[in-house]
Image (cartoon, rainbow, N blue to C red):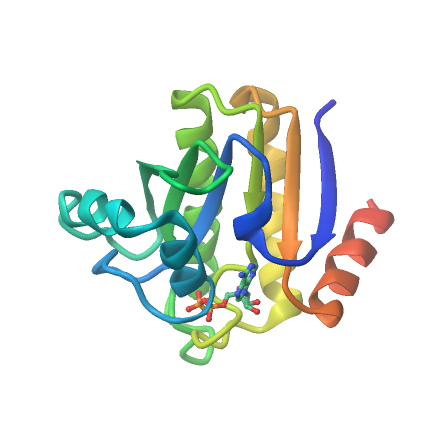
Length: 168
Ligand code: ADP
């Protein structure tokens, strides 16, 4: 069975086959984890993203990692939280689902996810983590992924994930 881990820190430093970006529909960069990934990967990442022509909310597209230690970046577009009755949960699950499909396609054995949508998009952290864990668990057996990291930038988020993983 694949390992699920919690890591607290900067996703751009992780030596894994793929890191996931919490991108926006333009895929042309932004703040938060998106900005950090673009800075660390270098200008070639923006050029590669420009060729993708954007990405709908709830799905993900792949580029190389360029100057990152990771070979791939999966750019997932999470929903903006708008009260919870605008399909936010399904759209967030779609991001994790899409990334696990990309993992299978690109034969990724190790992957790290940030807490998509929980920054400036304001998705409630606990609910987002439950969706993340549930969705990747469903997809793990068919994905070929052996090591999956939930990369949390702050301690409260890391604690939420640790509790969920301990519970199950
Ligand atoms: P979104 O727009 O999807 O909400 P954000 O980048 O604002 O995306 O935030 C998503 C999550 O990524 C937040 O929990 C934020 O604290 C975290 N984050 C920000 N920078 C990094 C980083 N360098 N590595 C990992 N996580 C990060």
